[in-house]
Every structure is written in structure tokens, then in C-alpha cells.
Image: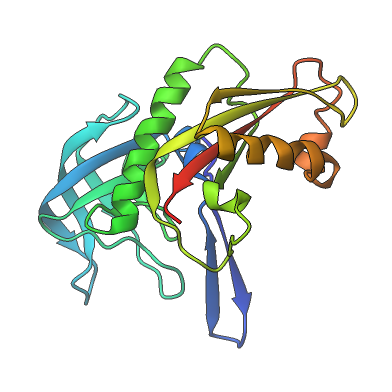
Length: 239
């Protein structure tokens, strides 16, 4: 079973009270990290948790399967007093991210990034998943998607705010940075798919003049590799 792409941390405030913080990674890391990524409609709640109306066992109708490995349409959900757990209800449609359990069940634990498609964020995430899946199929035999940083296009604008939620605008840019072997010097930046000359120039300028790869341990240790590339996946968002 693949390692889960998410983690959660519980911080002890009192002997019996915990708070939970979930980290869900990026769209690309989720698609690559979960064995089962699919959309489905909940057609039947087969079982609920004890003393609760929350579903424990669901039967779903698969709508769109992104990895072709599904062997079941039964989904199990855990429960948690401290961490969020997805709560699918009858007739709702979802984008599911599920790692197959050791017993073969499709089980959803706490801090799982599955999301309702009735949620605007869910509809945006589904479109990103479709794009990522196509990129993975297109570049499967290359190293282009081995080291990827995902950013919103707003990041490259002067009025960018980290606290603002930006709506996805159904497009993306993909830029590949080639470094000199063993050095932090950029050899070349290739635009595989641009977002217009103005934004493309801002992306290239940022990585040439402001970005310091030495600040990122996961990347700088790979600079010695002759074929190391850092790809920048930029999601176009509405201003």
C-alpha cells in the first residue's frame, strides 16, 4: 500500500482534550499518493456509526475513475472526536481519495482530503485532478513531474494575499527549470504551457531573481543530479 500523502498532528492541551491539524498536500501529491481516486454518487447508506447518524458504510456508484484499480463500490468511514472526517450523505456526489487498507477495504480515516462536489472547492479540485491526470499520462516517461511546486497565479501578482481565497479559473501553466549540475545556477527555464506573455514573464523573473532553491532541503540535495529539473505548476485563478 502506498504511503499516505497526508499527516495529522494532535496537540495535547489537557489530559483529555486534543486539537487536530490536517495537512492535505497538493493536488498532484494527492493524485500520485492515493491508490484510489474517483468520483462517485452515494446510493445507499448501509450502516451508521453507533449512536450517530454519520455513515460508517456506503454503497456508491462510480462516476469517474482516475486510476482504473477499483475492485469495490463499498466505502467505509471512520469516526473521530478530534479530527475532521468526510461525511457523505445519500445522493451526494464526492471526489474520493482512498488508500486501500490491508484488508482490501476502501477505508476513509480522519484527515482525509475527500471532498463533496456540491462544494465549490470540490468542483475546482475535480477539474485540477483531471488536468493532473492528463499531465501524468502525457509526461509519464519523463522526469518533468518528479519534482513539482504548485502555486496559484496570484502569487506572482503585486497584490497577492496569503489570507485570500482565490477561485480557480480552469487553466494552468507549466514551467520547467533546468539547473547547472551541482549548482544553484539556473541553466534554462522552459515554458511548456504558458498563461500569457505577461504572467509567463513574471514567473520566469521570479525564479531567476528571487527564488532561492537552497532554502528547500528536499530540492537542494538533488542539485548534484545531472537530470534534475524543478517544474512549476501554476494554477490560474481569478483576481
